[in-house]
Amino acid sequence: MDHLNQSMVTFFIIKGISDVPELQIPIFLLVLLIYLLTLGGNMTILVLVYLDPHLHTPMYFFLVNLSILDMSSTTVTLHKIILTGLTGNRATSYVSCMAQMYFVGSFITDELLVLTAMSYDRYVAICNPLRYTVIMNHRDSALLAIACWVLGLIEVIPYMVLIGGFSCYRSNVVNHFFCDVVPVIKLPCNDTSTLEILFIFEGAFLLTLSPFLLTFLSYIFIIVTIMKIHTRAGRHKAFYTCSSHLTIVILLYTTLICQYLTPIKEDSLEYNKLLALLNMVAVPILNPLIYSLKNKDVKNALKKKLHF
Image (tube, rainbow, N blue to C red):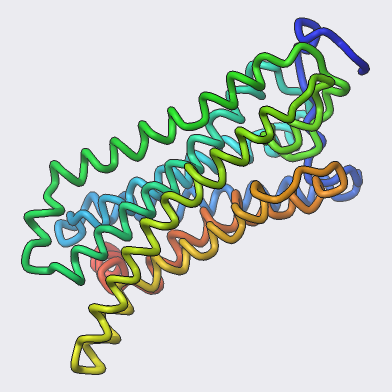
């Protein structure tokens, strides 16, 4: 499809994870299993936090937001693979593709901001424990969460406006398993240099660097405070309360930087697809596992509800 006017681009073809026909059923079954496990794990977190009064704290309130984001981003990115496996139809409408890009970008931003809020929560809990309930009260925690969601919804609008202004496309085949901004940028026949600069600027400074610096500063103060604890048991307990959050932060930032903040080249799209799988599939399923397996409060709540 060469040099078609945008009004003629009514749909895109999602290439998917693989073109090999023999792999389509195994991929469909594996993705469906991962999707169900992701929903099940994160729904378990939501139910436990709702039912157990001991988990009605800011830390678990932000964890609930993280679980909602994980379920939302997984649904937005994986639903096409599941639908394609059921119907064999790889086409998606132009509007659906644009909407998918918008929500994927929003959810990624939201997740980084919520993780930043969680690092601030840990900073207050460890560095200023006597004032924790005053600083991290229910009202301020709710306002902080709302701010994270609103900023995520706003942040992606500028580059979505530019993408929506493209006048023609060289192809309507998206080399990905969902409509991601990186492969879509390679399709227009218009000059995309302005969009790429804006995308890198927003991604590097607003989306990644700003929340990363805030998270990094929180952990600098946390580590300094922990090192001042005289007992080894006290230091271990303090580190243990942060380890789950820090694991997710490191994994998410590493995959996002490799996926979005590297030069956009045609031959790197397959590599980008693998990173997206790790980011959009592995992280959402690991979140509930890490927070449940490494968190004593969550494990105790689960045991009580299961009557162990």
